[in-house]
Length: 68
Image 1 (tube, rainbow, N blue to C red):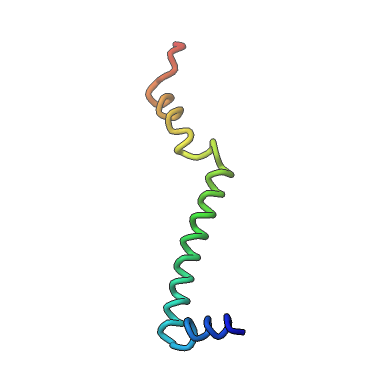
Image 2 (image 1 turned 60 degrees about the horizontal axis):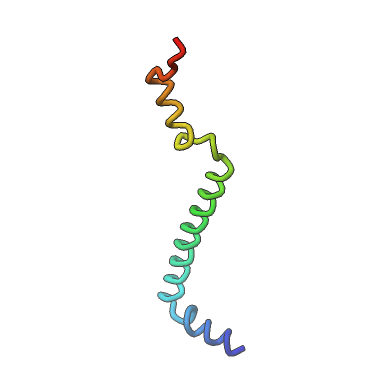
C-alpha cells in the first residue's frame, strides 16, 4: 500500500504533474513503437528495399551489361 500511496502522491495528486506524465508517456511510447515497427519492417523486407537493390539498379541503368 505504501508504494501505491507514493505513486499517487508523486504522479496523480497534482493535475499538472499527472497531465505531464501522460504526455511524456505517450511521447515515449510513440517513439518506441515507431522504432520497433521500423526494425520489424526492415527485417521482414530485407533484400526488397531500395537500400538493398540500389547498386544493382544503378548498374543496369548505366548499361553495366557488357555482354553486347
